[in-house]
Image (cartoon, rainbow, N blue to C red; front, side, top):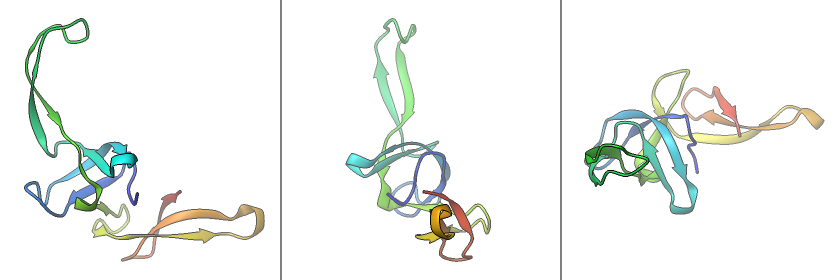
Length: 108
C-alpha cells in the first residue's frame, strides 16, 4: 500500500472528495484505510460491559486505498509517492519520497 497509519491524506474521489484526515488504521488484506472524520456512519449499539450506554454511535467506516492520496509534509500538496534506496553499502535504506518536490517522506 502507498499509505500507512499516521499519514495525512486527502480523499480524491467519492462522496467525501476533498476532505483531509489522518489514517487511523490500515487494512492491507482488503486494500482499505480508516481516515479520521471521513466516511462517518451511524451504528446502533446495545449496552454491554465495554459500552455502558447504548444508543446511536457515529464511527468512521473504511474506504478504498485508491480513493486517498498522501499529502506531502514538506510541500503540503497531495502527491504520488515513489520508493528508492538511499545510502551506500550497509547504510542503504528504502525510503518513500514525494514525486512533486522530491523530498523524502519517511523510511519504509
